Length: 369
Image 1: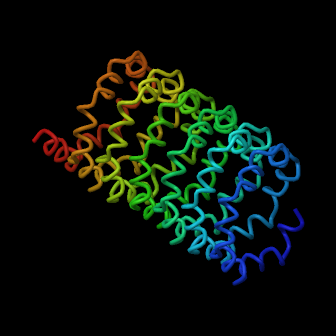
Image 2: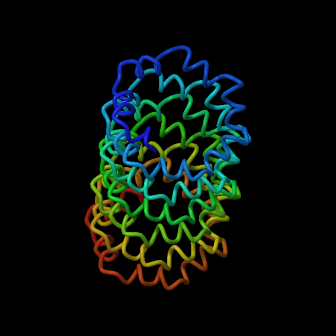
Image 3: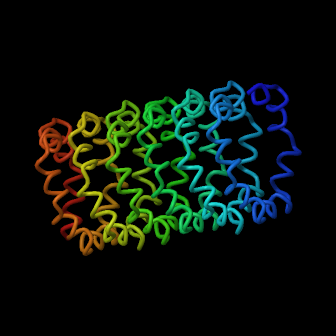
């Protein structure tokens, strides 16, 4: 903890040496090595994540300062990080038993519940990181795309750890944090949604498999997901300029037109998610009701992006897919329509205003045409 809080650690992150190290062939080779993979699979790595020290480190002032440093931002902008994400080693690491076990560890769960994780999300550094060219490039990298398609990512979503993480107090608090709100409003989040990497990720086999995984299904049914929808953070996120801009982005439009989105709607996972108790509870939650009543939701429906999305070939194909048809026929969808939450949502003034918006009417006319 003291090391992370030290001026030296902060200076190290700001040093030209760290930047050069990230750009080096050695860093790339290290991530691709069998040793890195074995380290992630080791009992030591798992124990480290479960340790009180790891939790304390996340809660330290040093981590917060590090995330806010110019060095952290520069590191994200480096060519080395981009190459590392595209490396075979990064892909293998995500597929390793260690990564899966780490997500299932008590430490990962405790880390998400720590004050440090909450503070990190609220830090200027996290906000700046999301706005950095490096974050944008990372999302557009072959490595990110391959990582989403990896067996490890799929298994991670199906792990007990991911499920517990979504149910943790930390995840709930993170969604309610100023940092999460600011992140959604950041230029970086907007650019990330418009990036080639995000588009390719949605079209990847990994994203499709993740939606069909037991982990995604369980996550939707978890208490954490339900609480997240009821959180002030989710409400504020929907009202944020970032969410509005995201809906208007070329990336959102392309995502709806992607083969991945179409396949996701046709997946068993999407069908099961609609039939889950979690989806039903989410529709009945105060958070969903408040989200529909938010200025952000209203603005999103009136945005050029939403209009273009409704007019896109992808949206049309999604509506024509077997998966969408099956979802509408599922017991979950039927229960959702019968839920008190859906009824309340339809009765609120914001939903009525959204339906009366001239742009929404025009979008429906375009769709019929």
